[in-house]
Length: 369
Ligand SMILES: O=C(O)[C@H]1NCC[C@@H]1O
Image 1 (cartoon, rainbow, N blue to C red):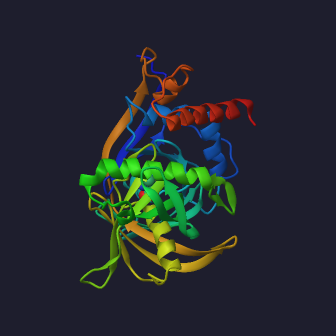
Image 2: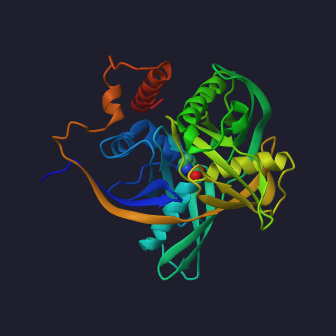
Image 3: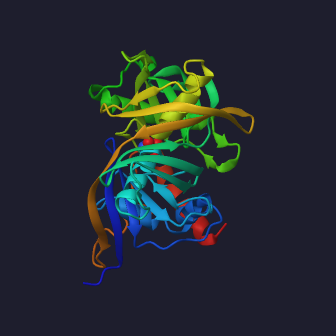
């Protein structure tokens, strides 16, 4: 059988969030930085992301990471993060998955009891400390890029909800943070559909009035993730803890506590005087899994005071897959196959905007503008 594509993928999840890792079958692309490589895939080779993340080979609640040669000579490897609706500059659960796969497959030699790894991401360099024993990567602690608050207590009016107060912060992705009680809900799966519907509605309302832009990389802009937060509690061991539910576009939960969301929340908590450097903050997901985090230092990003966050979690390999494309398969690329149908009927305006966005990115790539 002659296949049009054959890609080697290691299945993996971090605290419940799928972060598969491509370790073969995809060549490097031009780019002086990993962000330039991200843009190359986004504008010229997005068919790979569509192929792996859309049905029948993928699903919305999953991510795929592409291991590539790094651009920064200090790094051991580079990787790009492909999510259902976008390429994320940085991602905590995906960093934990990618590190686990790199070490447990031997692509980076594992040293016991601790292996230090440097990873080049589209958001910048991320250094990682992995606890290893008996060939297993038992935990991954990553030093994320500087995280900072863009807005505190910003008011926004949401149809069907009314006026609410939100925070906006960067933790490797741009986050909208909302006190879940302010919309009459709680982080619990009995509110799952309402959390998703209201979360997506808040994103649309905020997008209409505010565009976040990273001061050092204007290509890092826009919102695709929103964190509903529960209040801080103090655990028996004296540590601060809280739950959150992260709504990832097009409308699904992060099954992990969300590493970049944890970093964005730490920046908000620090700005509010709720957490100090070095204090442990345990962050939990809607399914009860946990990341342990802390602020390892302070910095500045443009005009914004920033924190240097560190997050620790675990990941497990679930499969070794050879993902292939039979030339006669009717579903060559999933959603992009559908969006090519000009008459594609959309249920909602934002679906249409999504189709237009995909087509714009593709045209930009083809015109190389
Ligand atoms: O942990 C994180 O940061 C990621 N999890 C899915 C959405 C985010 O990229």
